[in-house]
Length: 154
Image (cartoon, rainbow, N blue to C red; front, side, top):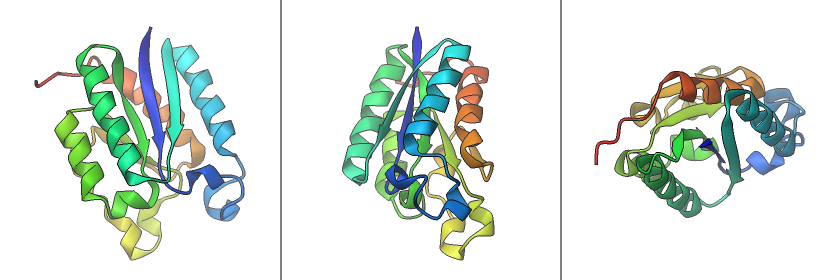
């Protein structure tokens, strides 16, 4: 079975408690179950990880690039949280690892504060899904399968 990796960045461990008017009431565990259920429908093994640490996310993206090159991974669903707007390191990890990423955001970042409207990741992502609540995760998993096998540039 082919796998997909779902990576969540800082503060997403607070889902269900943090600003429920913006992010909803579902917890990270609920989101992970939603991803697992979607993966089962699609024939994907879904691995979910969350970190508040930029370097750990970078390491996971490097690992994902290796696994994708080996044909084990269709790609990554990445909600980098606030790092989306600040992290050149994550952008470089996506690009450097040559990993297919679908960037997701639960809220519509384009309708929020100005600083949230710029993404360092979007230019190197295969696609971006925003503003549809936690449904962005199953949509992104479906998108990874619809894109077909990743092209390996190594």
